[in-house]
Length: 84
Image 1 (tube, one colour):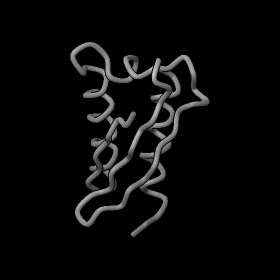
Image 2: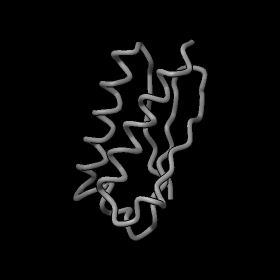
Image 3: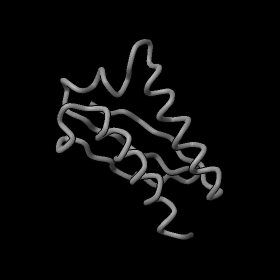
Image 4: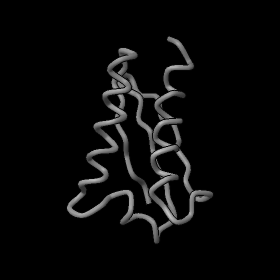
């Protein structure tokens, strides 16, 4: 397994989230390696939660779509969890 491939997706998620929120310093992503897929846990300041989820979860869905498409190119299965 190429360690760098997971980091591309982590960096992408960090970049997207930091550009959506008021408190970019509070953004963090934790990689949780599962048997079938890599889970990226996104944490943001509580007051920024709405900015990364969006109305009816639209922004969260778009973030997941972008990360998944990046993951497919590297042949990995990745999911994004927004954790509070």
